[in-house]
Amino acid sequence: MQSSQLRLINRVLRNNTPFRRALPPSTLAEALQHYLAPDLPLRALGLEALSQMPCEVPAAAAPPSLPSTASSTMDVDKAEEEKPAGSKTVSFPPSPPPPPLFLPETTTYLLLLVLTSCLRASRHDLALSLASALLPFLRSHNRRTLEPLAAKAVFYLALIQERSGKHLAALRPLLVALHRTACLRHDDVGQATILNLLLRGLLADNLIEQAGNLVARTHFPEVRTSLPSFLPSLPPSLPPSLPVLPI
Image 1 (spheres, rainbow, N blue to C red):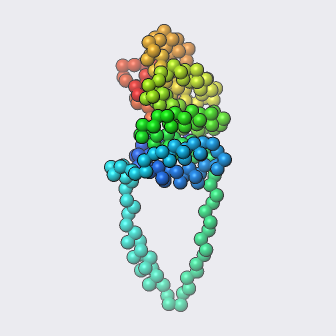
Image 2 (image 1 turned 135 degrees about the horizontal axis):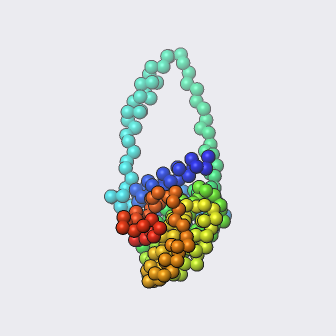
Image 3 (image 1 turned 90 degrees about the vertical axis):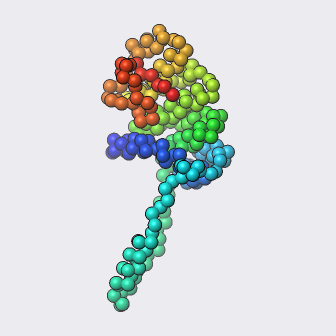
């Protein structure tokens, strides 16, 4: 069951780019209000960040219009005309929608959409506060279906750190702790992502010896035949044991 859910989450992440670019902040705010628990602090933080975003969506990124319903309406009218004269139409009252399930996967995915909206608006301060609050929430859950989303959150945290003009060295203790947890949980996508970020920070600070020790004492997950979809592919000249993340 978890493997099928994990496959669906990976499919969502692969097709996430065109969707998040066309999503207006107003619609995203409605989703946060509906699918996040009212007493969750991340809900208020995400809504506050969205309130400072521009409301309009670029025309190039606007979602495609829905197909016309004229043909379906004609089919319904034709079916009504073909009914016998004495037949009666039984109408049932509409059933109420089911209550929303406050799942951590839904919470994480929606907050990642808010985070990318802050990045597109160059609001690195809002994105950093949201990513910093999201990581403790993810570390409190040990769910296999959260692994790709958690790896994406760590990737965005490092990206925000660099775009804010800060060094990745400040995140090194956190990344080491996250890598240790990913190894204990056999989280392959987390290990691949965090190892890339650790090596990037070490090489950016010219710590070649420490980077070599990290490669010698760690193991890049072999089952990951390719990096996650949100990470670039490795150059063919580098061995698989020394991945570099060119952001």
